[in-house]
Length: 259
Image (cartoon, rainbow, N blue to C red; front, top):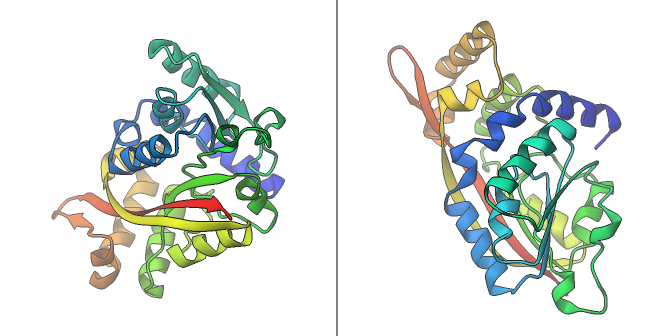
């Protein structure tokens, strides 16, 4: 990720930190349950949660591991909000760190002396990994990746990409499951298991969380209505006569281990 792109992400998400910290959609769900099950099965000891967002994944893992480092581009204001949530939930073993995803905290480097100390969970991000950022995966002995996944249909992908960019100008793109697996293989990891999970996005909450102006939101809804039916159907958009109600987001979960 370039410095310029990082600044765009910080500007976009830093001001929305409170909405993500308090979002019930991010605090629970089949995707988070699956990540926790994978972590528990591997008896993880330390977890690095990259692109922690509202901190929900980190807080969930705090109950089953010794230490969690929650890493994100957003800075002090977001960290304070997450820290307050930690105090409320008595999660004293979570440390929030701000920084670039390609510059993982030195204190979380995998231990070569203890197999338990080398286990990592790398969780949600919609930011595309560059060749440089495969280091985020490459330093992990074990990795669980959760992210949005593109379809195999080019026109449907182009449609949802435009929807995402209009809602969040810092959004770049989503990759297909095969591409995510290729990134992991390039980092020296072997994919053990993967799952596709559909996550329902309530339109008002999803657009409101990014503080869209009324005009921008109307333009986005007009774009959705004008799109070919096959594109809307690919993501199960639900529309009424007067409003966009919801759609389904494709989430890919991948578990990988080092050879």
